[in-house]
Image 1 (cartoon, rainbow, N blue to C red):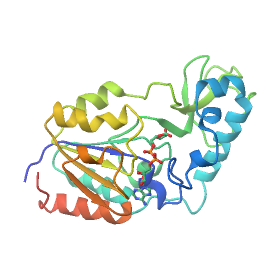
Image 2: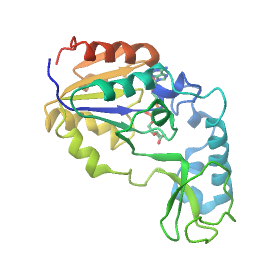
Image 3: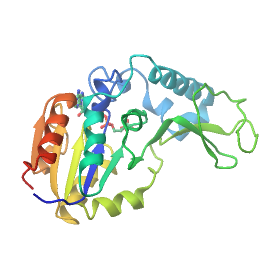
Image 4: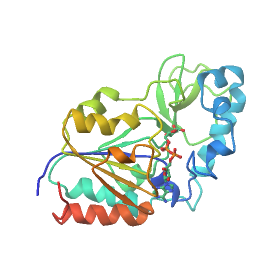
Length: 240
Ligand code: APR
């Protein structure tokens, strides 16, 4: 068994069994709202109140009593605690379920629903309550510039240098619960293969767009396939 470094990319599928809808499944979020209206800088410029209200609703939904980390989030937190090498978890999800499960070495590359930032002074702050166009920035006090700290289409994901360094030097790259259509995340598997010569594993409900690029694939609900694979890794039975 090798004790190399691991990079894990997660997407909406890992939170589906926690009660959070995905984006592109038949009943996904993008079948209900127009993503250009709610998740682009142009949409925000056109109708900021509509975009803030949408994010307020999402934030309230994520605080529902029924929303909690599932066995897949727990398994990844356990992997980080018990794996002798480094484990970096990169999530595209804006929910806080990996945080609540206890993952510490975690990058929210598409931002976080429970943070907002101020376009006037750049401050990033925790946010539990709703925001309006009148909400003042807690740092500079200016109203009108507070926006969700999430990455919209056309914006650059966060901490890309750090992610690319880790992907380019890992031994194992895992992709979990993501459709593999949104770049740059969808390109990480190729970087892991060509730059790091890493073993690559896809864990998903069904084959993703980039499934054929992965050396190993396991399909099923995240709450089943992720704990099983983590158990195998920690027991030294994984074949890489
Ligand atoms: N277990 C595992 N995988 C699942 C489950 C489940 N229970 N349910 C659904 N999936 C899979 C789907 O088969 C699909 O491949 O999760 C994937 C979800 O894909 P998307 O909805 O496209 O979500 P994601 O890949 O995270 O989207 C990437 O797109 O809209 C943007 O910024 C948003 O971060 C998001 C990005």
